[in-house]
Each structure stands twice: as structure tokens, then as C-alpha cells.
Image 1 (spheres, rainbow, N blue to C red):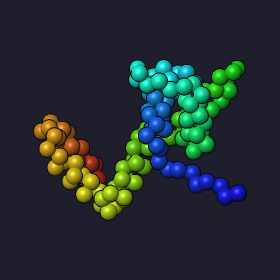
Image 2: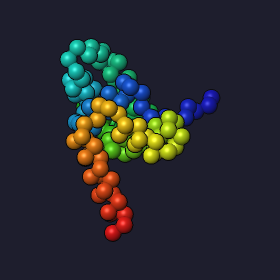
Image 3: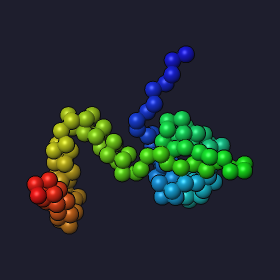
Length: 131
């Protein structure tokens, strides 16, 4: 039987669970369920399945403590953000990061304050690269 290729990106529900684990640092199925928004009615067994899928994909590891499994992220949130942005840039912006940034800064809903923050980040990066 062919082994399934490990996915580099998360589905929407997997990202929802990873976001909670990143915030917690580590947690049980119950810990993650307790962090989900009120009204997000998900069965314990469904949540356990999602965490096991994340473990299969090597986004988390688990250790058994008594009857509980403690899940810990293996990938930092910022590392996943970088991976996701590179994928988005490649797929949607012809692997041209400037096109991605142009789309972002041309968004009419972006405030002058946010644009100023982006400018400061770019200026800092340019200064660090040249000096």
C-alpha cells in the first residue's frame, strides 16, 4: 500500500486546533475543546481524531500521562506562518512576494497606522540588511 504524503499545510479545522495548542503550549483533548469558542459543539471523539491526525502529519507529538494524552506542537506558529505565506505567494502571486505585499497595501481597509507599521518594518529590515 502506498504511504500518503505528509501534508505541509493545515486544513481549517486543524489550524483551529493548532492555534489553541500554540496558545496553550501543550494540552489534552479536553484542554483544546475548552479553548474553542462557545457554541463550537464538537464531540470529544472528533477532537481526539483531529489531534491524532495532527500527530500523523507530525504537527504535534503526544505523551501519555495516566489515561490522558498530552499534545505538544512540533512546529512553532511563526514557522507555520512563514510556510503558509510562501505557499500562498507561490500559488496565488506567481512566487512574487512583492505582488503579495502590493495586494495587501492596496487594500482600502488598511489604516494609515497599519501602513506606517508596515513601512517601519520594511525600513528596519533594509537597515539591518545593509548595515
